[in-house]
Length: 339
Image (cartoon, rainbow, N blue to C red; front, side):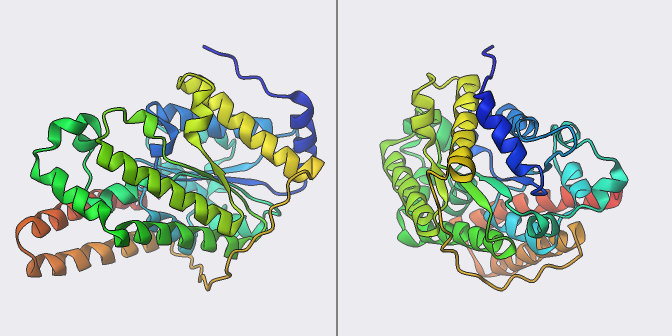
């Protein structure tokens, strides 16, 4: 296994820079942009970022909102609106290393909140995945289509999904959700440094050509949005080209890219990214996981009403979505009961 080493001079300067910034590091959305070993890469990415930017006296607060369950763009809005606590964030994560990220007691975690921390931090750091899971859900693209590719060309589900994802409204809806996420983060703190990871097509080698072209267009739309907001877009395919797609090499490449870019922004001032985000109205409540549960329940109840008016394949798709929402609600309920 490759040992991860970064330029010590840059790290030392960045540690000094962030020592009085009340740094919070937020990882958000799905794991699709982190490759085949995404869970392990995610855990190590946040752990290394914390270690790199920690001093003897100060440690960054880590909110790990990457998830295989709570990975729709709406979830980040819910986490921000209802001010998710660090304790509940820990309980929501399965197979997470949050206990290693944050050396805090349960009582301390209960008194640290996501939106409040973003507001209080002088320059928060956000690592944001592509939102590809939301695109998959909206287009009804199953994992079978991604894994089996051309073998499903005669499958009704494939053509229905293809028609859905080809509809410009589908892509525009997801890009609009990403834009809403960015605006909400910047509304809480306009000095946030956000890194958006593009979707890595290399991981889906069997992907049908039709879908590949559409997803390439999706990445281009994300890139345009990042330019509009002066957010740093990271092309995962270019990063992986340098390290033969092996996850340790990719992890090193991603860490090095972020550290190098932060150094240029904060220390050498070679790159300046003025923020062009629109300031939106974001009311932050105090319900935490109970508020998040209520928001997901509202989605579920709407789908249940729509189900009564639907038929055929549309009814099947709503049922599929309701099953996803039901799973989200059950996990959230367990977290609420543990508090």
